[in-house]
Length: 478
Image (cartoon, rainbow, N blue to C red; front, side, top):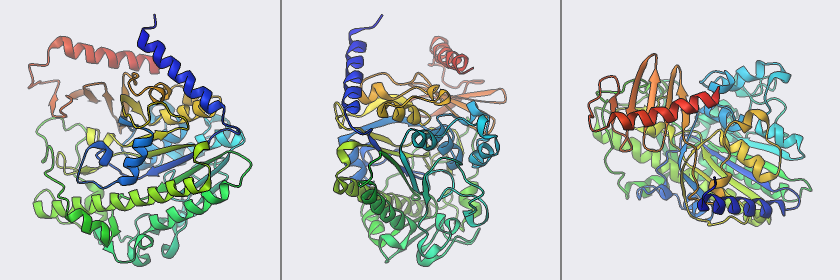
């Protein structure tokens, strides 16, 4: 039986749908993907992070404050967002080879990707920068082999402006002056006096601006995805961003140091240590602070590129016809629990920003607290655009109710995985299982092992309730 609140939320959903259906032709979509962006952006409450453009979008749209990714690594997380399926559901690798494994399957065995489905329904589909795993959408030598596409039969155009870096692979980890990363030798961070075009995201944002002006003249609806690389390692930004950041202290690291318990997916920061030439931030507090300053300077830089894209959308005259989505593929640990990186099932690695703005949105600027998973974005965009939902994507619940009403309930559970470990996020808890071991985090995100609990105040009844929700979710996924 529906309660009054349910009827109210249902009415808002129908209202949102009717406003979107009134758009003729179908609404456009601007999807902005950001790499390794933590959830503590400005709208998330951290005063030491300067993100005026993301904050403004959150003030006009709907920020999902409890959004979680399917896998804490670039390739598999983007796979989930672009196919509506987590690797657990579709049986592909949970690492960065997810797209290539999918591409090897016969065409008839592949569930359609988001751009493929929208393209089949009359949309002009364009990707610029890092949208799937490889910037420009190709693997192979220099990440530029047209025979090795991340998403075959999907994008009408898949572009990567490489500037002085010349190849997508060099641009992905590019330093100023067109320099590419040298494994084990390059620094963790750098700044430049060359302005926004000193690093690849300045070039990607400009290409996005130009494409928005071009698409505004199209007689077809369009899906434009722009993938910005920062703040992915190395932490690079123009000088001005580091100057601002140094004037705004980043504060202490929460949960600093390797935990004594819940080591199911703990790791020694291999990406940070193997690919770059760092000191040891866990042993050098001053260096750790410097690393964090450069990360957030890089965040400020990428926020400015988001602003350029949103300004270009306004100038194009298409803003009132366009759904805007800003999404990050996962968070990034900056010393929390002694980790510098992602690739683990802790809260800080799995939680990331998600903002959606729709034409005629009800209650704009009010954030949603309900649980949301990245795999739901495909389903949601189909609903908002009036398209059918592919069967595979339909299994991830739509976010339509929370877009209509920020107080609407979200998912009961969001499932994430890394290797053989699986983590279940409920309203107040995260339970992680691996090879028979199981551990739990509470909403304070302190941790303890369920096999030998050190928190007796968590009653058996409370624990059973959490595990029952998870068990029911597991059954529904089969």
